[in-house]
Amino acid sequence: MDATKRAVCLGLAWLLTGCATGTGTVVEGSLQPRHFRFVTVVEQTEPGPGGWREACVHVPLRRDTGEVFKCTLGAGVPVQVTGSEPMPVELAQRISANCANLAAQTVFSSTTPVTALGLACEEFRATFTTALDGAIFGSRVRQTCHPATLSLKSEPRKP
Image (cartoon, rainbow, N blue to C red; front, side, top):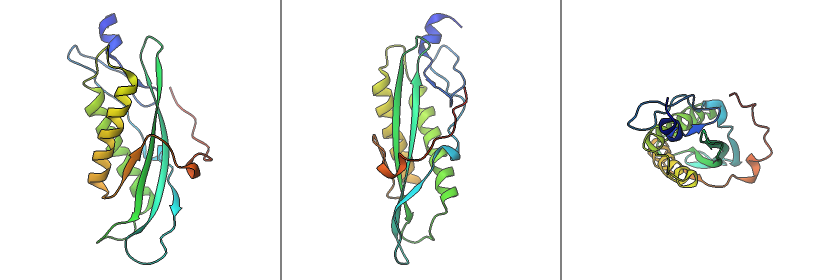
């Protein structure tokens, strides 16, 4: 792979395993449901819509030049939405991972060697927000994490 193609590669450190082709970045690899360690921050006190869960995921965006930008995703989802049963944590994790991976494919496939990593992170977060809210109505993704999620010990990262 020549230097230009390598420069186009944005790696999500332990998440994405490579990139190829001359037409843009191909994102491979994925966030796993286990990366979304949801904590209930607002208990559901009565039947019906209510309650709130938060998770914090730090996604390192990396270029082969050594430049790294930590993209923080503070994902929040309701425990229960109108017209449904309470959502099991495992389902919220799976949906969140799927939506984040869709957002990564969408955003990082169009990056170039001059794309600022901070801007790529913002676009990733915005696209993830749209996908997650479409899958779980009322969800949101912020650039900061809820304090209750910060005390969780994260899993070791794999190269």
